[in-house]
Image 1 (cartoon, rainbow, N blue to C red):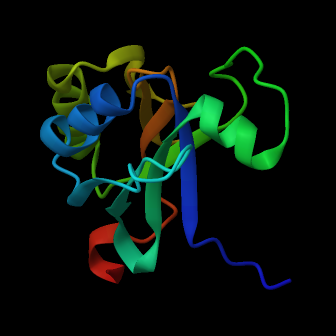
Image 2 (image 1 turned 180 degrees about the vertical axis):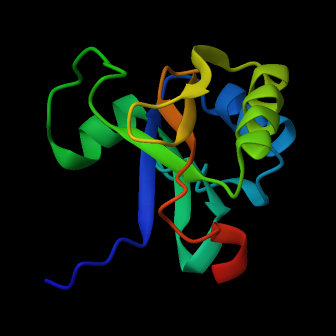
Length: 143
């Protein structure tokens, strides 16, 4: 297996609410919900950088498709990292997420490792870390 990820799918409880958050609140480009004609098929895709896609799909439909029990969601299972080019951009992105309806889990702060970061939670509790790492290249310059 090659170390490559092309789609990250987030399980959500309310597809319309999550679509509005990511499309209208954060400005992620999408064609909207597709696959409604299929039982367990309604999903929305968002094009991200470098060919990566973010998908939102009902948790109950993921459980059905993967033949696993539907358990309780936990925001501590994983985080999504959004690296930016400056401390000011961390502050701006967190404010944009808050204005879109996100919960700021951890306000922006200087980190113990020399960076600057904060966390927000989307409407389903998924954690996004918005981070500036002075050791990494500016992500805008490598797109």
